[in-house]
Length: 338
Image (cartoon, rainbow, N blue to C red; front, top):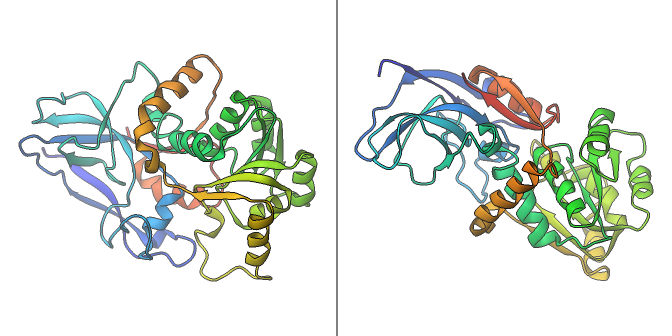
């Protein structure tokens, strides 16, 4: 092929908030495919908070991105060339191709996307990794029961918005914490949350307490920081806390100011017999088909709704990602590459 592969690589490791100079747009030849391989042309690219951790070389659950390599990301790509008899040209497939336009793979770890069943971009959102994070974390760890109060942070994002809707489907009361009045109205007026609290408001602890008069039975943690500080005094005995993200700390370069809050947390863990469990979505990989089937049914029945924030063009990816970590997106953030 004569086409050029445009890709965005890690130029330097961010210290604190990522900056444009931490990324570099390159043009390299499109790789050739060998026997059993396919060439994917990226059509949709997912942007997610976990990518900030991959830009650091600190010890974590996954290997960091190396300097000069494309940033890790899942995409929906079109098969434009194939030497794999099981994967035809023209098919859409998910793959962890990274921030680039072309990717060669043998097909292992990819998944066919049916454009007739749902818009292809949903394979990166409500029917993809973020949706599965919400589904498996809430149902396996949170285990909401009818009449209980479920609180979720970053509630207008792709994970939090589904957590709240599933909580309602299970008979629980859903309270979302989000940034700004528009996102809060979206939660209650469009997604059916019972209450929404603006974490940018003047009195987050007081507003959250008013929204949770019977305390909190399940808190789905995406944020940490001041949000968790407001949640902790409201946790009921035997509350469950699935921890899937701590986005408030992803750009931190030092410990937060103020008193050491660990003793108070551990006292609450003991006296309230709290169940706090961190998880990575692939801990529940065997539930993927069940998740896609059940959530797909809910979407088709109108019981679950979703929102996407679409950015056009690979070159806009760094700017969009920097904004994601500041809460600028409204819904699942995806990059469309024509």
